[in-house]
Length: 304
Ligand code: 13P
Ligand code: SF4
Image (cartoon, rainbow, N blue to C red; front, side, top):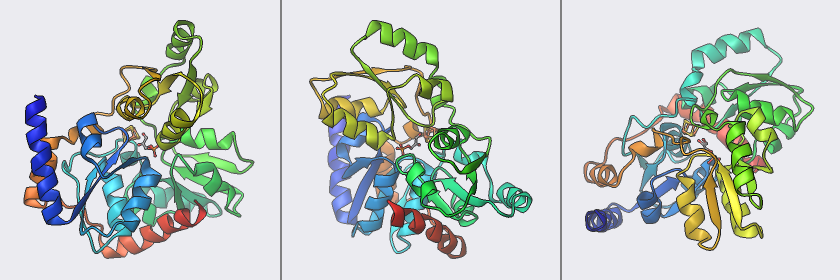
C-alpha cells in the first residue's frame, strides 16, 4: 500500500511540475493528500493562497465551494477538483432562488454568507466570511440586521458575540452535528488535563461545553503555540493527521470518531493523478456570477 502511494506521489509530483500546478488541500483531507500538498489550511488560508499563487493550474483537494472560490479569485487559472461530486451538503442547503425570496421578505437586512455556499449564493450576498473571521466581518458592517446563510450553528455562535440582530438560515453541517455534549463529558473524565477545542459549526450545547471555539486553522495554531499537551478535537477527524505531524509530543483525542466528512474523503491520490492527466474536472464560474461573487469575497478579504 505504502509502495503504491509512493509511486502515485512520484507521478503526481512530476506531472504537477509539468503542468505548472499547485496543490491546495483542506485540513480535513486524507493524510497522504495533505503530505503532497503545497499548502494545507482552512477555508480562509486556502482562498488567500489561491488568490496569490502564480501557478497556471490549481488542484483543489477539498469540496466544490472551495474550488469555486479559487475560480472566483483566479479566473485566468484552471481550477481542478479531482472528484466533481465532492460537494458540501451544508452549502447545498441554500440556493440563490430561495435566498432571493427571503431577501424580498427582509429588505433592510444585510446578507452575510458563510464561505460554505455556492458562487450563485455569494453573488446574491453582500459579504462572505469563514469560521476564522465571521465575528470580525459582521462587526465591521454598519448594518444592524443580518441575514446569515446557510449555517444556523455558526450563525448562532456569532449571535453570542455581537449585538447585531442575526436572522439565521436553517442549514447545518451533518458531520459536526455528530459531535454530542455527552462525548465531551465522557472524554473530560478520561483525560482530565485535556483542553476541549471545537469548531463553530458544532451545536450550541457542544460549544458551551468547550474551552475554545476555533476554525480548523485556529485549532492548528492553538495546538502549535499553547503549552497544552492533550487536546480533545471537536471537528472533522482528518485534521488530526496535521495536528500530530506538527506536534508529535502532544496527544489529540477525537471528540467523536464519527465526525468524518464523506465528501472531503472523495478526493484520493488516484483521482489527483487522473485529474492532472486529463486536466479535468474543471470548476469554472460563469463570468456574470463570478463578478458579483468576487465583490462578496473581496469585501471579506479586505476585513481579514
Ligand atoms: P474551516 O474554514 O474552519 O477550515 O472550515 C471549513 C469547513 O468546511 C468546516 O466544516
Ligand atoms: Fe461541509 Fe461539514 Fe464537510 Fe465542512 S465538514 S465540508 S461543512 S459537510
